[in-house]
Length: 279
Image (cartoon, rainbow, N blue to C red; front, top):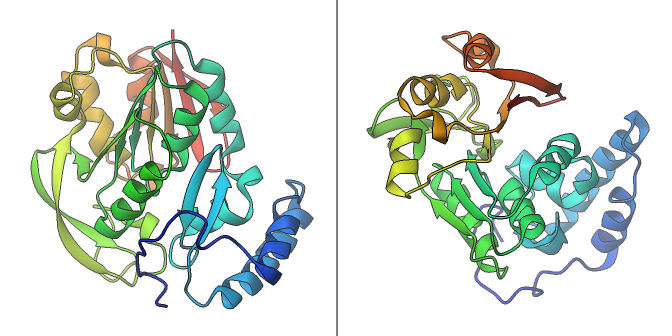
C-alpha cells in the first residue's frame, strides 16, 4: 500500500496489531521530557517501517481517527504521542469553553484541534475547520465522518488576504507544512492552485456572529489571514482567544504589535504557538 493512498474501510479495520500495538503502548506512555521524546521518536521510526504504508485506526484527543503517519508530521505526533500534542494550547481552549462555543480552525490539517474541541465542547459547539491541501482535506473529512460530531464543518480553501485563487506550495515530506508563502524548491515539493477566501468572507458566508477561539497555523502566512481581518471585521467577530503559530520571520507586518493595538495580550508562549487573549 502506498503511504498517501486514502482507503475506505470500516473503522477498526486498520487497528494497531502486533509490534505496532506494543510500540504505541510505549510511546503513548512516555513522559513529556527529552528522554521521553527521544525514545518515542526512535520507536516511531520502527513502527512506521512495519506498517508498510497502511493507515492506523485509533482513538486520539477524544476522537476516532484514521491516521497516515508517513508524510505528515501532525499525524505522526497525534498517533504516537498525543500526550505531547500542543497540550498547553488544548488546555487553554478547554478552559475557555462555554455553552455555544464557537471555534475556527485555520489550517486544520487532519483535524486534531477541531476534533478535540468537538469532543470537549459537546453538541452545542460550532466549529469551522479550514484546510487547503486536497489530500489532507480528504483525511480531515474522513476523520470527521468517523465520529458523531455534527458540530464540525470542513471547508476546502486557503485563507488569505484575497478572494479567488492562490498558489499553494506543497511540502512532499510534510503535507501539513504546505504554505502560500513557501517559494518553489524550498520545501522539495510541488505547487498547486487552490481556492482562496478571506477570513471575514468565510465567517460572513457561514453566518458567524461571534468567534470564541481561533487557531491559525498556515506556515508563515498568519499575517495574511489576520491583518485584513482585524482591519475590516466588526469588533463583534474578533475572537476572545487566538492561538497563532510562530511565524514572525515570514510575516510582513508586526502581527503581535497589531494585536496589542486591538486589545490583545500574550497569554502564553509555547513551543509552537503564541496564545493571545482579549478581554
